Amino acid sequence: MRRMNRDRFVRSGPTPMSAFSLIELLVVVGILSTLLTIAMPSWQSVRVASAVREARVVLERLNLHQRYFWQQHTRYAATDELPPLAVLSETVGHYYQLSVESTDAGFLLRLVSTVPTAPSLALDHRGVWTTTDLSSR
Image (cartoon, rainbow, N blue to C red; front, side, top):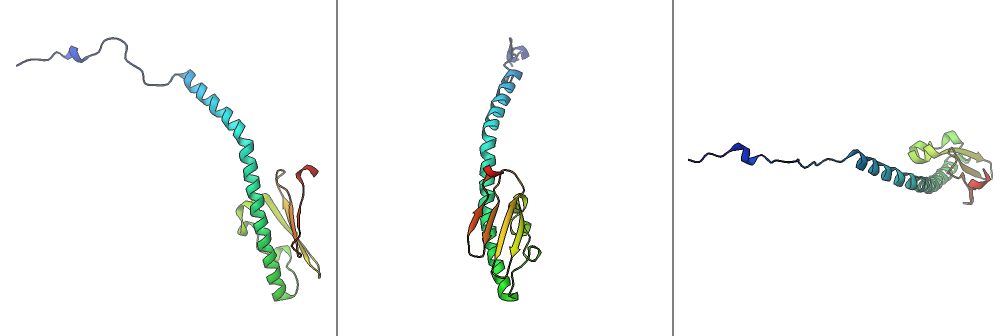
């Protein structure tokens, strides 16, 4: 019977390393932080644009609520008689506050922006939209 020597399977010389060096990790972190810095403003503008589109849908729904309220009570609803914004849309509730101006002749639904990057929106009883320009702030 032949006996195998244990030393025969042991490799001599330097063992290969399979880890990253600190410099390689720092380079990767630097590249990722640069890409994140470039992409973040674009991402914020996409989020605001999405919130504005959703706010327009919420105003349309509130317009329908006002018309239904008129049929039931022969007057337009006040702010506290309409559904809260957070119920209609959590995103819109974060970006806007609702105010309602009503007269016998009509109403004005206004979403006032709570963040400086989003425009304020308004919709009246005739379906006329008004947007506050961001540059006028």
